[in-house]
Length: 414
Figure 1: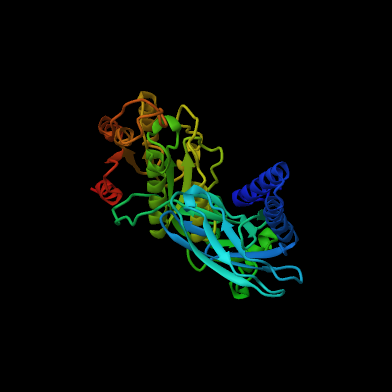
Figure 2: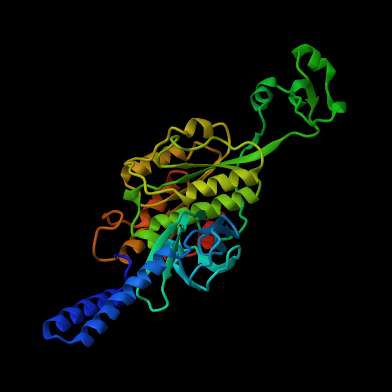
């Protein structure tokens, strides 16, 4: 009887009370009314339990990946699986808070073999990976005496990448690095004829086969039509909990992730091969992406979408040995203590040039809720940090809570 609504339970209680009172005072009319009141919710409960509830569901999203602040369209199709007609269905789509409130639809009875299509919009508020669904099905009688709630096993996953901003083009310094698996041989070849030769790949033009080298190496080798050069950049994101202030979507960590995503997208569009590293260092950080830069960009954005606050105390530097082979360094930083500043001073010479966007996290701390400690509870100002970084060989700019990331990026080019 747990499927009875409040109205159904009230009818049941009133009917039982009327029957008891009618028996006590000898009033048959009271007994009849009581029996009728008892019968109505019980019959409704039986009808709801016997109604067609086997429903198939198919959910389609306009995109499985959206940027924070954007909207995705959802289409849900459903219909009866059995041969009987359904009753009136109340369909509820459950959503996490980051995607907005859930949606409810009242669906008219569906004939066997029929279907209906529901549409609604998802508003992605915060980066992350979120389930869309499952669908809850409420079956009730016309009088509202009984309500059966069933969860349909159907859900999809939406990836929300960080919000990005368009950045202006500035003068950046980076060392040209060869792409492809033969770079080590090129660097050691000293300008030998083999510097324009690589292994044969399926699909290569057979006319480009270099037969003398193929005979010498016992492998098919082809001539390159042009050198494969590419600018490299390591993007360092300080995601440590101790370095940021605020909570949730309004925290400085979210602003830092958004800034890193903007820099990542901008540099990739400018032809850079970008490797993302965090305060955790080499752990969890992929190497240089080989191949389509667009694919590498999406992989990095997906990683940023699910990146949480780190528990590290210090900035790891175990990735520096790779960066020293060429490229520049761009860092997005939060609060820096004396140890962090010494570490960053040493990193300034790890690449051809070092650029830093330092968040003035004190601004996020002032706007954080007064209850709780937020991400951390040290007061800080980015002013002295940028000064120390500049003295250590970095080009540094400060980003405040209400400041403009494009303006801070523009400052790095001056």
